[in-house]
Image (cartoon, rainbow, N blue to C red; front, side):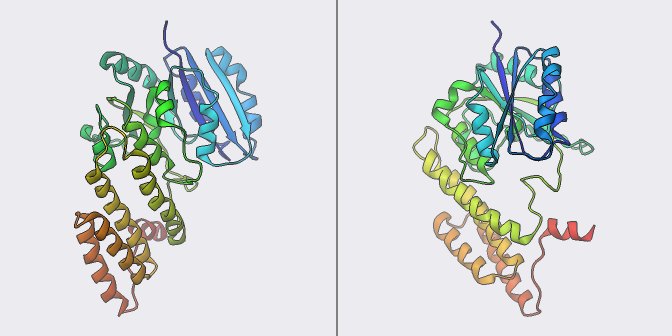
Length: 321
């Protein structure tokens, strides 16, 4: 009997784009297919839109379920979806992304061929497909060390994994507003054997409403609390799992401390950046990101004498447009 694949789409205030994501699931060449869409308290007409898609799902041979709940964030929505799925395999799709029609079939074929527990693939941004992705960056085998060290990764919307893994991996942490996917994936990679399809099968669109986009220095500083906390949670929840590497975690930690310290420099908080540098150095040792941070601190100090601050490259570019 062919395995059922369940897809979970969390959505909030995205009635304009969520139908595209849903249609891309309806358009998958794999059957049997179950789609669970979790409306996380939207008040923009999403509920009515989802209610209108039942007949289309029936015609396309997709078991379509809608969960309407009060707003609790993306982790809460994904967890609600996970509690309702029936498939032997599970995928996640964000409401502003979409899949190529062969995504599920290609991944299920590779899972069958390799005997792996989970599969990933490349993403692409429409209009930016000229550069070939680096195949070495995809997760393969027991790849926890490379994932934790940020040497390999897979966007959550590319994953297809055995539902049985959830008993060991657990749910998403609902206390994290951002970086919740990185913390959850850290648990997954310590429990799963990975395979990969070296094709760009997931499209993503950047928008001003994307959770992954910080639009101000203040937003970056707010996000940094979860950035630091996701780091602590990865160590707390994975350090006793097979394949844990403390050195890999220190590589990730050095990156986190570097990023958070730079955000301090962008608002002129040189002392706060120095404190983060000192803590990072004490925790990680002189890992590559931290000596670079020392140079940035020195430059920011000299700039402060001229009444200047370092500029965030992305936010500066946005302001210039």
